[in-house]
Amino acid sequence: MIPTATIVFREFLEIALILGVILAATRGMPGRYKFIGLGLGLGVVGSVILAFFTDAISEAVDGVGQEVFNAIIMFVAVGFLSWTVIWMKRHARDMSENLKKVGAEVVSGSKSGYVITMIIAVATLREGAEIALFTYGLTASGKFTLMSIITGGILGAIAGTAVGIMLYLGLLKAAKKYLFSVTSWLLIFLTAGMAAQGAKFLIAADVLPALAYKVWDTSAIISGSSMVGEVLGVLVGYTPNPSGMELIFYAGVLLIVGGMYRSVKKPQPQPQVAPAN
Amino acid sequence: MFSKILTLTGAALVLGLTVNDVSAKTKEYHISIKEHRFTPERLTVPAGEKIKLRVKNEDLTPEEFESHDLNREKIIGGGKTGTIFVGPLEPGEYYFFGEFNEDTAKGWITAE
Image (cartoon, rainbow over all chains, first blue to last red; front, side, top):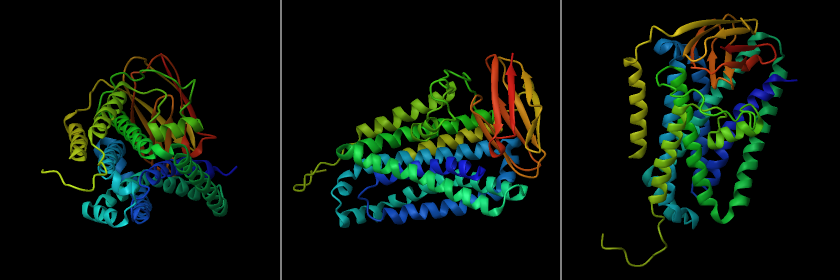
């Protein structure tokens, strides 16, 4: 048994799932590979740097610096994701008709592509740092050969990526006509889950009260450590035993971002007369 | 605009930390990690009140304290101590483990 495989798989899965949804959602957006690739690159570099500073961050703010830092990362991601969902709906037509020229102008004009870069970078950052720390620990412990660590890491990465690709292809195939709505709502649920996770970090740091530590417990049905539980955890923020505060954050983002998404009008194809104002 | 509101909310929450003084009443419990095992492996804490766990990693390598039952995860660097607030818990048994060394690092918290 190679221990790296399972851990790297678990962390990779999170990145790959988010990437899968973003790829499906930004279909037709020109230059998206550039923005996503840039985000991945930044995330990888950032996670190695973050791994180096983990101890310093942890000891900041009375020993709960890590939680505060993680919460900030989560809330930044929530901001970027909410913005993207709304932005994409406003520009849905440009993208769905795949008008390269119009699309390119929209993208470069509004810098929206870089928001996607940031989402990917932020998503990669935390999980990437965990992989870096774990791998460092294994190497330093001397229990495993470097070769087995690398092999395990690669196997885990391949498996995680495979699940992400399955999600991407599955979305394209299953959602087809409704791809835009499906991926948008998926992103909104994913965002709500991140907000709840951010709240959880602040509860662990004693910055926020839990309100109720465990409102319900569904771990007997879907355990948080099961494969299904983990995938649902990333995609829709599933936690078997959420606290009251997490639920408030979750519902809050769902209502606010979901409400905004619904109220934004998708531009209709009316090429002729421009309205008076 | 919306992302701004959210970012500001996040910032406000973080600022709240400086105001939020450590409550003196929270009971502290210590767990240490050595050779990828927890000591004590079984810990009894009072149910119905918030507690503060201080986890000291005496190994040279980092460990991630994780518990699905407690809904917590935290990386603790080699030679470092991490603080985790837990509860108020309902009476019962809560499993935790070291994610980086799951085959040896296991423990249980009993709330009663």
